Length: 210
Image (cartoon, rainbow, N blue to C red; front, side, top):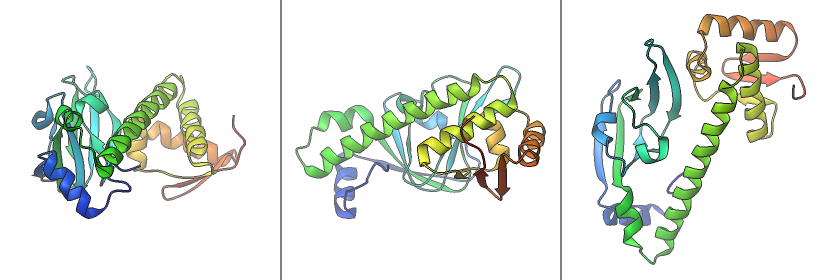
C-alpha cells in the first residue's frame, strides 16, 4: 500500500499543492529526525531510503523500521518521539513534508483527496500491525525462536514459504535485537536441520509452522 495508490500523477501534484508540501533533500547518512520533530508532520519518500534506529542505554542499536520510495513516516505514525531514536538516510533521499492536521482539516470533497485519506488510514493501521508483530517476536527468549517467529509472520503475511528479506542479514539481526554472529550460527543450524534454505536474501521454509 502506497499513500498515492490509485491517484493519478496529475492529482498527486494537485494534492501536494493543497497540502503545501515542502520538498527536502538529504545526503546519505543524514539524521533527519531533528527536522521533523513536530508530532504533526508526515514525511513521504519521493526517492531514496531511510532507517529508523533505536539506541538503548547500553549504546546497542536496533532497527525499528526500513522505509523506501513512497513509504510514509512521522512521529505521529511511527511513535519515535524519544531521544533514543534516529532516522538515518541510507542513500541520497528526497522527501515531501506535510502537516498532518492541515491534511485532515482541508476536507476537500474530491475523489483523490478521499482516496489519499483512505490510503493514509490503511497505512497507519498496517504500521500498527507491524509493531505488534515485532513485539511478539521480541517476546521470544532465544535467537532461534525469534528467527522462527519472524519467518512464520512473514509466511502468514505473504502466503508463501519463500521469503525475501527486505533488508540485509545485518539489519535483520538489528531488527531481532540479537548479535549478528550468534544469529548467523543459528541460521546455519536451521539449514543443517533441514528447516530452511537460503540464497542471498531469499529464505525458503521447509517446515510447517512450528
